[in-house]
Length: 85
Image 1 (cartoon, rainbow, N blue to C red):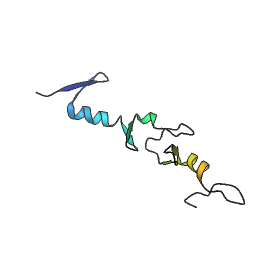
Image 2 (cartoon, helix red, strand yellow):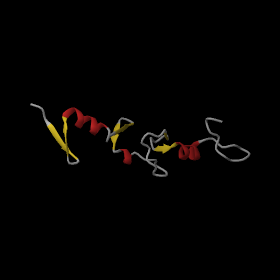
Image 3 (tube, rainbow, N blue to C red):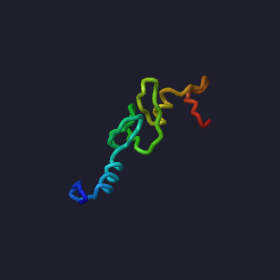
Image 4 (cartoon, rainbow, N blue to C red):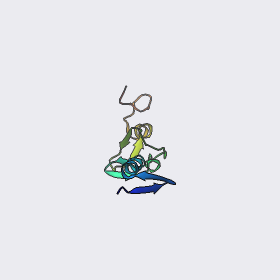
Protein backbone atom coordinates (compact mmCIF):
# COMPACT_ATOMS: atom_id res chain seq x y z
CA UNK A 1 0.00 0.00 0.00
CA UNK A 2 1.46 3.33 -1.08
CA UNK A 3 1.13 6.51 0.96
CA UNK A 4 0.10 9.82 -0.57
CA UNK A 5 0.63 13.31 0.77
CA UNK A 6 -1.53 16.39 0.29
CA UNK A 7 0.41 19.58 -0.43
CA UNK A 8 -0.89 22.80 -1.97
CA UNK A 9 -4.18 21.08 -2.78
CA UNK A 10 -2.49 18.28 -4.75
CA UNK A 11 -1.73 14.67 -3.88
CA UNK A 12 1.81 13.36 -4.22
CA UNK A 13 3.37 9.92 -3.84
CA UNK A 14 6.15 9.78 -1.24
CA UNK A 15 8.95 10.14 -3.81
CA UNK A 16 7.38 13.16 -5.54
CA UNK A 17 6.45 14.75 -2.22
CA UNK A 18 10.02 14.52 -0.93
CA UNK A 19 11.36 15.87 -4.23
CA UNK A 20 8.90 18.76 -4.05
CA UNK A 21 9.94 19.51 -0.45
CA UNK A 22 13.65 19.46 -1.37
CA UNK A 23 12.99 22.25 -3.87
CA UNK A 24 11.54 24.36 -1.04
CA UNK A 25 14.62 24.03 1.19
CA UNK A 26 17.86 25.94 0.78
CA UNK A 27 20.76 24.34 2.65
CA UNK A 28 23.69 26.62 3.44
CA UNK A 29 26.25 26.79 6.23
CA UNK A 30 24.98 23.51 7.69
CA UNK A 31 21.48 24.97 8.17
CA UNK A 32 18.17 24.87 6.29
CA UNK A 33 16.32 27.97 5.12
CA UNK A 34 13.28 28.93 3.11
CA UNK A 35 14.95 30.27 -0.05
CA UNK A 36 13.46 33.73 0.55
CA UNK A 37 14.87 33.79 4.12
CA UNK A 38 18.52 33.33 3.14
CA UNK A 39 19.40 36.98 2.60
CA UNK A 40 22.28 39.45 2.67
CA UNK A 41 22.85 40.97 6.11
CA UNK A 42 23.35 44.43 4.59
CA UNK A 43 20.83 44.85 1.77
CA UNK A 44 18.38 42.00 2.34
CA UNK A 45 18.80 40.57 -1.17
CA UNK A 46 17.76 36.92 -1.49
CA UNK A 47 20.91 34.83 -1.91
CA UNK A 48 19.23 31.72 -3.34
CA UNK A 49 21.52 30.63 -6.18
CA UNK A 50 23.83 33.63 -5.71
CA UNK A 51 27.46 33.65 -4.57
CA UNK A 52 27.89 35.02 -1.08
CA UNK A 53 30.62 35.65 1.48
CA UNK A 54 30.89 35.51 5.26
CA UNK A 55 32.51 37.99 7.61
CA UNK A 56 34.51 36.93 10.68
CA UNK A 57 31.25 36.66 12.66
CA UNK A 58 29.64 34.38 10.04
CA UNK A 59 27.28 37.11 8.86
CA UNK A 60 26.19 36.48 5.27
CA UNK A 61 26.68 39.13 2.55
CA UNK A 62 26.10 39.36 -1.19
CA UNK A 63 29.46 39.86 -2.90
CA UNK A 64 28.99 43.57 -3.72
CA UNK A 65 28.17 44.39 -0.07
CA UNK A 66 30.96 42.18 1.24
CA UNK A 67 33.54 43.88 -1.00
CA UNK A 68 32.20 47.34 -0.16
CA UNK A 69 32.68 46.66 3.56
CA UNK A 70 35.75 44.44 3.73
CA UNK A 71 37.87 44.69 0.57
CA UNK A 72 41.17 46.56 0.81
CA UNK A 73 41.05 50.15 -0.49
CA UNK A 74 43.26 51.83 -3.04
CA UNK A 75 45.38 54.48 -1.31
CA UNK A 76 44.91 56.93 -4.18
CA UNK A 77 41.25 56.63 -5.27
CA UNK A 78 39.88 54.96 -2.10
CA UNK A 79 37.80 52.47 -4.16
CA UNK A 80 37.66 48.81 -3.17
CA UNK A 81 40.25 46.56 -4.78
CA UNK A 82 38.27 43.56 -6.02
CA UNK A 83 39.60 40.00 -6.40
CA UNK A 84 39.18 39.93 -10.20
CA UNK A 85 41.31 43.03 -10.77
